[in-house]
Length: 277
Length: 277
DNA sequence: TATAATACTGACTAACCGGTCATCTGTCAA
DNA sequence: TTGACAGATGACCGGTTAGTCAGTATTATA
Image: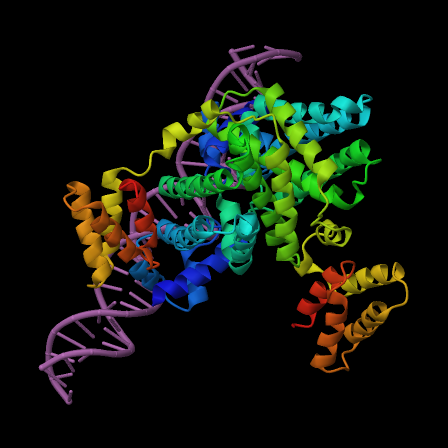
């Protein structure tokens, strides 16, 4: 598949030079293909970056979410969380660089929406982890601050090893951050981010994608799929969104059908929350 | 002065759209002047952004540095520090947005150098504050981590109110961060950023280190070591860099010898990539 | 081998960019 | 009224960009 090749080479170049500073010409030269061939795989340069973001962030967020949800041993949960995050960043360091460089870029509205979506998804996962870990403890007041601090740790230490090619002792880093997080969780008393405050920046944009948006994304995905159980599940789910006639069990099963495929995993995410699963 | 006007309007536009996405034409239109007039005040668009960065960062860094240096009452130093930082960000929120957006951008070498310079300046100030506040306490081991955490706090909470226009209680925010910082400073025991590690990114990008630079770093390290297998390995490796006579296996073994020691771990990393291991 | 379908090419377009410069304008001293 | 000149103008230039499309090469089919 040409798409794969283009994405790989594009990631390298974007990581080195940034998105805007990299021309389509450059990408195609690196691939050894013509400019025209690029536009057979992607409708535009913007579509390319969005597909790249999706490809990795879907994997990334679901991996972390899975770890948090499935962990039975709460003793090591925080450690596993940090370890998985930095491990991912290390494995896909070029993508990590893109993520940090183009984070708050505003060249493209769709891009911004995508980034915000995954950011929120991550917030939700971290919050649920915090609640699980320290729920019994009186963490209620400071849990949003804790989420922010955890994100701050991740962001700072990621930059450290992404941009300085530092030899990375994952175990030490995770242990160190676990200790810091625990200290804050068990001893902080002065919250800054109150429940009222969190609403302010949850309110406007957090609206999960609208039903129409999700359906359009599903259509988009279906066009690119060959006939399969996944495609059929997707089509049935689309009908259910218009008018739910099946029971919860069936819908859940259909969502499960598409969860394990990289191409549709993220849609399963959307649908889960749409159907309140 | 036209310069003033141009800078003000440019900051607005850069904050909204980013530097690269804003054309000189747009800036001049917002100022109500012609394109030619722009080039009477600035030699180029790049010069404009650099003057903007300088204008604010000189003010900002010296203000913070002054606070840290002049404070006699160490009790409130940390509070004053956070307060001043967020107060500045609030007053110059458009500039703050530019700072965050274009942080790790790579469009212009001069720009990158400038940013790195001010970042280092800030690091130095924070480090000296940390040493002053917790010098008596055994902060030695974790002081670099502390600097990183402080920067992480600042970065996360800045983004919060810069991009969400959240009403900001500076006093509460500062108090909250003081508590968090104190908790970490007085209770952390597991450092991640060792003295050896900090060296790597004080001597900026590693990939650019020449053979001579690496050798000089090795000499530097060897001076501080007592006689040991590690020191001997280091010396042999130095010879091999001048003229490789040993086989790959031997070299790899020597590198392995110094890998497991915190003081030389980072050098092993440099050598690994030098010898293509 | 002939034909149809598909994949691929790269010259081309239209738009926009940063930067220049011949030209113009308003002001003020002579 | 004249002339000189700093300040301002905007058409213009060379260069780069994303994206297109008529035509070519490759592969599958018959």
